[in-house]
Length: 479
Ligand code: UN1
Image (cartoon, rainbow, N blue to C red):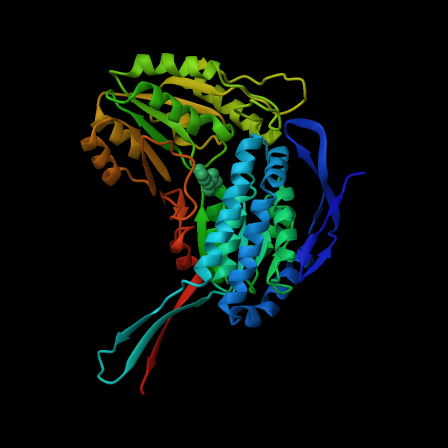
């Protein structure tokens, strides 16, 4: 008998139309639990509950909000090993990465507990003598939150925490593949002292409850992380209903390696950001752009390092890389290896499905060389452990290839030249730039987001989150 898990609507746990099993991608025989599938009527009830809770919550004291968020953060941090293990079991990143992500989620709630108390406004003189002008920030209303499967605890946290901190109510729909972490988070939130209806969880498919959430007239804003295709559709839908939007979508992040780079460091950060978390990060480096002086050495060193990587059960000790999260994602990853080869790329390491003691979606990280910028493998997001190498002449060529992409989330450079590092920071067309650091793995207290096809709308995280989760009011007073 597996445990059943229900939706949280208006402070009540409510069973949906049916239940779906949540399966461990490291071991397909391991069922984590049964999670309910909400109906469109339940989605509507959740939005109504959030609307009903909004007047009181949006005018409640900031101390009450700070206390609730602090309590949530404290519990997540106290249970980080258990929650990190659940995360690894349902999503497939390693247990250590899972614990790291749970820690990050706890820290995010703590950070926004503090932010409740730090919201400020401005008092400025009017151009008309004697009149006072105040600029303040108010809650937006009901926020619809739609989250992906690759960071099932951190991404919900960095959307929920600022939404609640600034006085909004929430209806959250987590990815259908990973309801376990979202449900655990909702259960913690339900005991935090936050009034019924302020936070609601609805689980299920995008086609059944995602579209109704985006189109619902009772929802004021949508914060979404996921694929570019879905993001663009949400943007179109929200243009019709005039909702505020924040979209975090794909990446095709470049990692530049210049001739003067420290080779061991360049290899380590490339392996980390291309293959750790099974490459399933929108910040992963999938294009390694290498200048010709270091090119042969870099490929040899990458192959040697990749031969030491241990792929296996996410819960096992000593594992570097867990499974791909689902069968459809595994098929997509493998098909991109074939597409790369058909386009003329050379597969120099990995790329095959691995047979391990448990039946899971394991794949050997793949490295393709001799690739060019026009190949699909360098233009489309794979979202798996697949990286390709682009050879360039010099720094100028590397910068050109860095920006030769429809995406613009993160860009990294490995160099010992201050001149090139400084130029790259200013001229790479990305929201986040890393010098001698992996493109993936960011801090939780500073803004996150990209440019071009990667992001749309205000930044997430840190103080900058208030841009999306509040609305500005300008008040004029004649004393
Ligand atoms: C990170 O690299 O630490 O979906 C965070 C993603 C991003 C988060 C990446 N929104 O992969």
